[in-house]
Image (cartoon, rainbow, N blue to C red):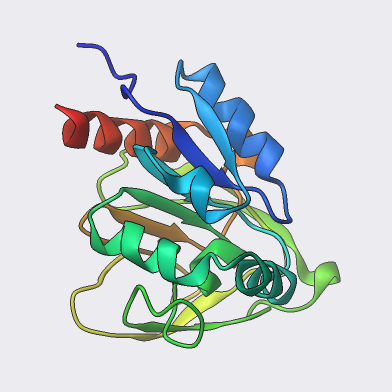
Length: 190
C-alpha cells in the first residue's frame, strides 16, 4: 500500500524548527509545503505545527491571519501533528482547537531540557524524545485521550486525527509520528 498522500503535508513555517519536520516528511516519501499564509493551507492533506517559541508563533499567526484558517482546517478533519510549542498553540488559550490547557516551560527553563525514551499508546516500542523548555498538559478536557506521560504529567494527547506531543521527535530522528501523520492523510485522501 502506498503511504504517500496525494496532497502535500503543510508545515507551519513562521518560526521554529520547521525545516527538520519538512526533511522527515520528505525522507518518508511525502511532499512538504511550508505554510506561512492562509493560501498555503489550500489543498494540504495534513499539517505539522512545529516546536519553537509559542509567543512568537502566535504573533506570526495573528499577523498573517492564520488563526481562523488553522481552526477551520482542524475542524474539517485535516490530520495534525503538533510538537512542543505546537501543542501549546492547540490549547484553549491559543487556537482553542483542543479542550486542554498547556503549561509552558513546565519541566523548567532551557537548562532543564532533557532526552528520554517515552511510551505512547498505539506506537509500540518507546520513542526517543527531546524535551526543550517543554510544556505538559495541565488540564485535559472532553474528547481528549492521554496517550503518554513523563513523571506523572501528560505529554501526549490524541483526538481523532490530531496528535499533540510535548517533545521534539524530529530532533531525535524519530519518524513514527510523522509516519502516523502521513498514514492519516492517506486514509483521508482515499
